[in-house]
Image 1 (cartoon, protein in one colour):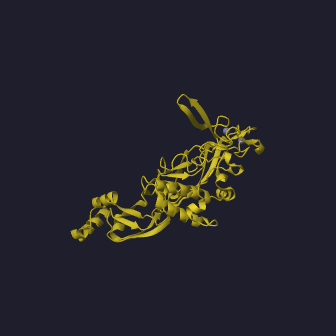
Image 2: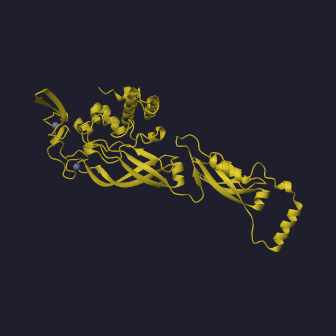
Image 3: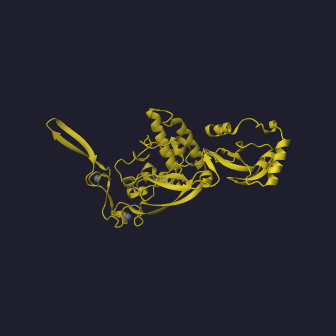
Length: 384
Ligand SMILES: [Zn+2]
Ligand SMILES: [Zn+2]
């Protein structure tokens, strides 16, 4: 018997989204398979909690579950409640980032409902899509409209596989189970085999008048549009899993997952390293020697930055908290400003004379760079 989802998460039936999320995170941390390696009980608990969470934090699925229990969520054979919903909207999207990839793991192919419908209509395909972001979009998050061609819920029958619900009948051969037992007598004795029902192809139901548009599958290939919430702090190469938004499943079965891989366009001013932003500033020789206040671009707009007299090439000025927000929502990286000093060229005689006079007046110690040379600074910057 499947346990009640509210019991699994240990929340009240009227729990709000925050309470459900909190309960799930706590359980997920306790039972996550990466933490409890080879502990099958933990793995089961983790799957159970994830399944409960995916249902309870989605208003549509929660309504179905409240009304029909576990049967309401079963595609196909599970009764009227199981028809017609378009997969699972982005529920466990961010958990890939929190816990590392689930791909191929205990939670991998098939999804949490694979076990609940061993013989029902086929689940949708997983899909991968690339999305290109600016550095700012990746830093602060953005809602991206993406379009792609994939299996979609049939518009004519809304995924039910027929426009006439009364033509859906429980298979008389297997009585809805989708599997049949055959008894084979041999010289060695009697063998009982269980296999997919040949009459309904293991689906438990027979559709007498299938939808013409989708030939009863409940899905058609179509141009799909989807709005994806990109979380603040994502970086190039990361994937965002949008649960259930891949290819539509057959006749209301769970959709596949959509994996949105992030690409980031090069920025004309900034370079990103982890959560830090690198920026080169150029001071003239005179600004570096006398000190200057310059307007510096940051991810948040321009800001005034003071460079003290005697600023050296290779010095790094750090603007705390001006980098990319951390993906977990806590804090931000820094902006590091690398100082470059410009030496004038094409000097005329008057300029040269001023510099010669200056050189006569200044002593060698005044050129002592404060702590360390440019090379050390650079080494620290790129190895630190
Ligand atoms: Zn159809
Ligand atoms: Zn059957």
